[in-house]
Image (cartoon, rainbow, N blue to C red):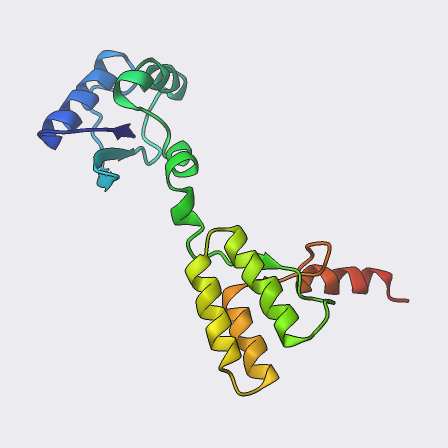
Length: 171
């Protein structure tokens, strides 16, 4: 994929295709089946799907490194890891060590709130706290907390991991 592609996108696509052909990376009959344009932080990017085409991957890797600084060329997986990590983690709940903790609802609110704030979810921490304090039962309060966090024990193990551990030691 390439970053910062302005102007006529067909020119970019034709230019990259011809450059790949000229460098012996793809055969002369090569064309891209799928091309994706997307914008992030005001920068237009082009991602080219290779779809198991006849490509000399080692030459492509060297070519990508050669144009890295000039065109921001990188593998899409690297782009995701470096620039879209926040997108990948949007729906990820932070882990909160409430399993085995003092079950006082205010203690649990504090643990969940800290877990949310630790990953920058300040608004969600406030929202969760307001919803829990306005709930009508302990069960409702726990249910609301679980909408926001992933419950773990003091060692960071999830319920599934705890159950697997319990199965391993049963006689």
